[in-house]
Length: 227
Image 1 (cartoon, rainbow, N blue to C red):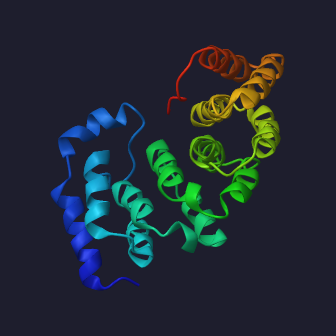
Image 2: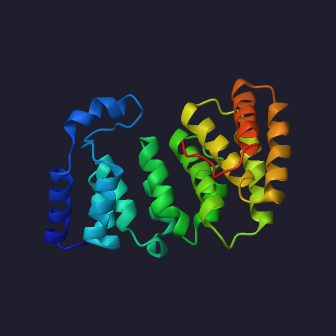
């Protein structure tokens, strides 16, 4: 456990940077959750730099249940110290897309367990657990420089299998992963376009949207956009 002073310092920084006037506007974009303080991402990143890496503090911040604190937790966590159980516990606690995506970006993508969790979570029914699988896959497509094309081609099967999930936060992450893989290199662009065309043939509303949006994105240059 972190020293009480460390946790108190972190909680004081959270309160100091709270923006209650922004909460209503943030909620319109699906950024909510009980206890939300309204911190901006730059403020949370500045907090994390001040606090430094501290895995015990990360868990203590996560345990507060405050969405902003959980994002900061993902920034100060030591990814190599994340256990499988801890990752599963954290992902089950996701209740907002920004906490999900920031945790994938700041912590999960750097874990040696990342790829295993993509395959495990992709078949789960919980909306944010499933979103985490594809958010993490999209993040790996950008940041995992050592992964070979075969890993991403195999992951396209997960994308195709989840394309009929019409829940907003899932289908957007599935689309994001498809576009991210296709943007990685020319070989994967071809594989992603082929996958998008197969998805299009599934015929569901979500599949048609995922495929059409991905095909538009893959025809343009530049990095995949985040959702």
